[in-house]
Image 1 (cartoon, one colour):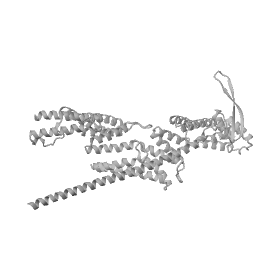
Image 2: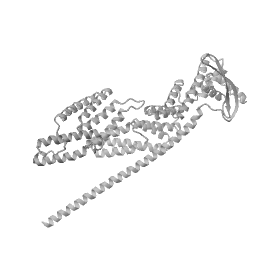
Image 3: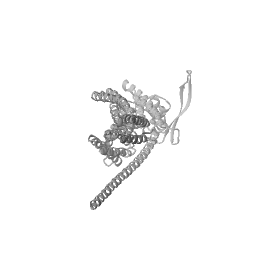
Image 4: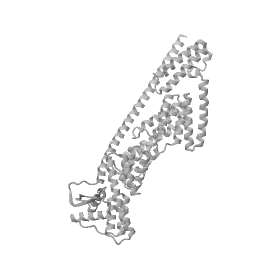
Length: 540
């Protein structure tokens, strides 16, 4: 018997030792995984920081080039000038005369200089462009360009107009109107109107550039909108980039996706894609905006456009692989959720949130999708505090409108449904009823009749549970008492009631509880009421 007892004790010691070693190995594995993930996050965040710094340099270079669209100031390098009198009407019907000077700089085309002068001085006339341009050319002793036929001149003007080369288009229109008086009247009328349009477009472009460089994003958009009303169908990448960047800065993500997508259809796609190109800047803006509105597949398409034409583009290649990994993780998480493998799903979702840290994405809809999945997992695991926190964040994202997009009632209804389910499991039937009711309203708005019917059933069940919980609450369940408590003596039952009340009161006391204070107060009231009722029933 002594030998048997010693053997049993030794076995217990070895079992405890083995259990301890397994726990240590498990803790070490978790620690190593956390360190690996932290290191990966730090590397991803550093890459994102460097990428943002490079993009900032690209925008500085863009601004430097953009400065050339503003009216030139009277500086050095002038090779010819014309002194003119600018006649302006006063409010009382009279007129004033102001001396002005048109200048031509070295390397500049005389008629282009005249165009910019007329635009800056609001001389909206094709004849002024031609007259001042000819005067500057004569002063600089520059021979006039070879004449083109009216058809060639008009074709050139129309093409330059579409390209957004307003000075070249305006000069071509003015040449046509001034040097081909025998052309058909309809052509001459088009040329005269075209020259004025180009002068007005140049004014709007100069003002838009000035506002853009001053970071006045709304004013930039107003001016570019007016510009494109003057020149509809213009495919100038500088104008479209200003629009996209301005929309990005004020959070109009859907507009950014649309504008950058349009830009990329108008520029050549072949050849090397390098930093500073307008098309590369459009890809950076468009992919980020697509991620912000939760459209990972759209973001992939931006990257794929680059890699199809330049497979060796390393920066885009890294971002493409990172996004592919994220979308794969979300797919794997959904598979685990469908099989109720909650711990595995939670681990994958945490890795997905970690992967997002290097993607330059703020608190967009893709993050809301991940949080909604986390809410489901935490609810299944009875970790309601974390579940509701994730749900609240997801619902908030879904309820917050994205500029250029409507709040999606279908996605919002699903988020509210998930949160309502978490409230049901947490026995917070008042909030569950509110969520299911609003979810049904959103489902009706989206036209999803089948889901609306499902929500109606859930709402009715929640209302029934709400009534039962308020009138015939299971106080043993509230205190988390053993199901076989009734088989114990009355004294031991009372001991259990006091023990559980003490533990739960310590857990839910509003001054000590973590997380939602309203939830803690509700739980504390229910626990206190349960203890009072059971104490009376058991006559403790």
